[in-house]
Image 1: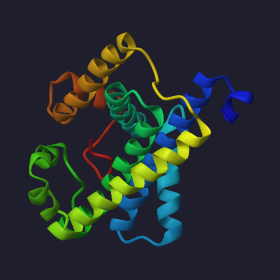
Image 2: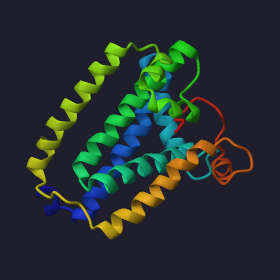
Image 3: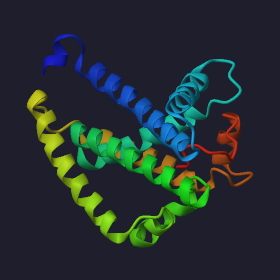
Image 4: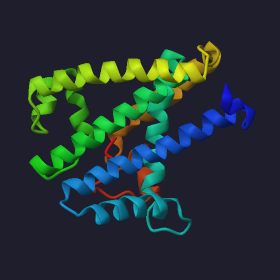
Length: 213
């Protein structure tokens, strides 16, 4: 692995996960600005300020931190199940690219971002896409293209990093439970009095346009 020449393996994996998790949050925020009809400069500036402002001590809101927690949680669940870092890396980024596009489309068609309650429709994806103005044919085409992209990218990444299994089961199991609990808590994020809601209030999260895990 070429990266291990310059970084310890664990540091390399950690840095690339952090960098692309920030990109995922940036992309979703950028797509929200697309849905709000801003020009390109305004979209980039708004998404950049969301990231920088949310990571700056003393800022009025640190919503980006909460967003990152959920991005990491999804990453952790996929990694615990697949035990393949690069497959997880590709799937996680693909999920948030699709999420950003879907969020933007719902803003255009319904003037609201994707809510946690919308995710209950995942068992019926054809009903879910109707909320964002997408046809069943488009959904199937995107699904097939996504599978092909994941397959091609996975084998390309594998050429540069031959490591297959990522970690041991006794690490994956608690990782799955902890990250799964974080994702499960999202349904109570805006329910007053719940622990997730109290955590959200700590980050001064308000019900505005943004990542709605």
